[in-house]
View 1 (cartoon, rainbow, N blue to C red):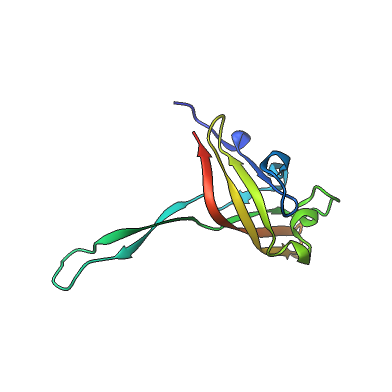
View 2 (view 1 turned 135 degrees about the vertical axis):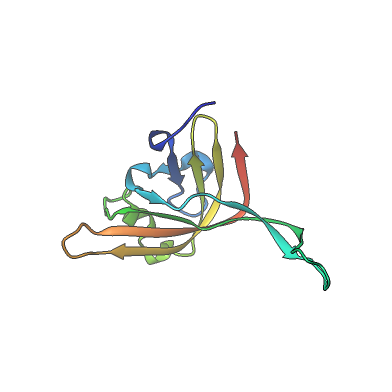
Length: 142
C-alpha cells in the first residue's frame, strides 16, 4: 500500500469558462489549506411511527461538498489566485477542476466559483479563500 502526502497532492482548475480538462492550470503552489473532498449519497429518512431506529433510503442522487481552498493572496497576472478567481466576472463561472491525491487517484469535474475572499490582517500577510461549488458528475480514477 502506497502512502501519499502533501508533495503528491495537486489541484488544477480552469481559468475560464469552457476550458477543457487538458488545459487546466496547476494552482497547488498557491494553496495552503483545503477542507477535503467529500462525496455524499443523498438519502431521505424513511422510518415510520413505531420504529425505534432511524432508517434511510438512497434517493439515487450523489453530490460533492463545497471545496474550500485558501492561501496567501497573490495577484501575479494570469497565474496567481486573484488573477484566476478574484474578478467579479469569475463569480458564478462554470469551470473544470482536477484533484490528484497520488500517482493514480484523481477526481475531476466542474465547479462554480461561489465565493472569493481577500483577508488582510494587521501584522500578517494577506490571505485569500475561495469556495468551489462542485456541479454535476465527478470522474474518478484509482
